[in-house]
Image (cartoon, rainbow, N blue to C red; front, top):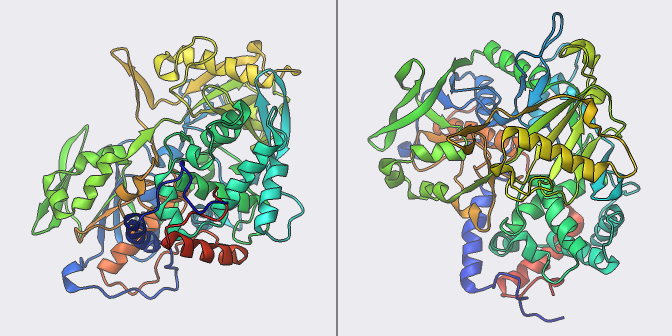
Length: 595
């Protein structure tokens, strides 16, 4: 085995190691504090006393920050231009209800709560829900398996959990991954073994290497896809990445994909007490009914005020601080003043606020302009006949539009046709479209080049091609109607998406802000803010809201306990290998197994 870096690895130089140290310092800043931590005293120049907080954005980050601060007696006003819950919300399909029933339920995309999530379930447990001893958290339902569909082949039901494990070692991780993915067709065994070995490389990589090398290498590169079989490239490298995080392996940071991959494997192992409840969970009702509406009601009870139809338009600085903000909406523009200002808006909206005065005050915020977003949007099909697809998530592996789906009615409480629509809809098949840039099989166009009707027809055609070999699960005559996320709109022949997602491209961690910046009373929340799970997820956004709340408590020199921040699990069994790798990285040497 050579001690020289492979051609696909980022070169390890003294500059790389120094850069790793700087980035690592920022990473460690978001890892350790817990509810028991003693708040640090800050310089008087950095203090921003007072307890009034203006939160701009009522999505996951904004609501999470409001929750933590309201529990500590702060005066909170949330300004939201559209919908509370943001991309996590569900919605009605207008005009679909008959007397005595609710409108058919629609969503931005089905909700998925991996067992590695810790912040979101903790928040849920503090939201009361009638009959639930653990609040909204008890509305989570465990999913046992996934239906994997392949074009022209019979679909396979694969368990999502790794059975029979009492501990994890590098060898057991490698063997478990091989066993879990052995169902993939046409995949050479030695390539599956190589993939599993590369995952062990990640598991045993030091923090220094993760931030100093893997952050600057794509997932496709770390998995050495070039020269491998079509099945390896199509399924292991591309499909598993796209359906999990809607990211492109050709551009995504290997550190980002490795982080969520490791967390999912650990959750699936059943050996991690913090990752309880199974690797895959969904809600047992529409998201707003099960979670968002009870949350908003609870926050109102804590004194949080919500101003709807008003979004942040500008921030005004004076004396090195935010002096006021301007919100605007249908009723015009209004000035807002507070002690603290939290920008909890999506990154594509937040960057519009970064004027010269703000960038001059904190040049590092300019990096947000370099962050990249992509599309992952849902469509629901309402069916007159229940499908016979096994309960659980459905993955059309290798489909051009990277489709995943979920049968909702069987896993929801209540009688679906008696509750929703006109009584003739027996099932809702909720589908996520994760790739909007690859031509489809029917029209030969990308999703971005299609009309709404064409998106619905093409998505259904791909689902049938991937799931109907040897089955009749999906039948055209069963379709009652469909509903595409209303964030997708067309104007002048051009398509637009109101809700794009951050994708962590190579080196993008350097451009992501922390919850607090150099402006003493300005804070940021959202999944683009540095967080442990490191993805455009509810979990990352929730953590960022907690981090922003803690920064506000710090700025106010508030003695209240800090909001708990949960670091990702690091297993002692891997500590020795990571220590060796840290020494090798500092010496400019590659990982022992990376060759």
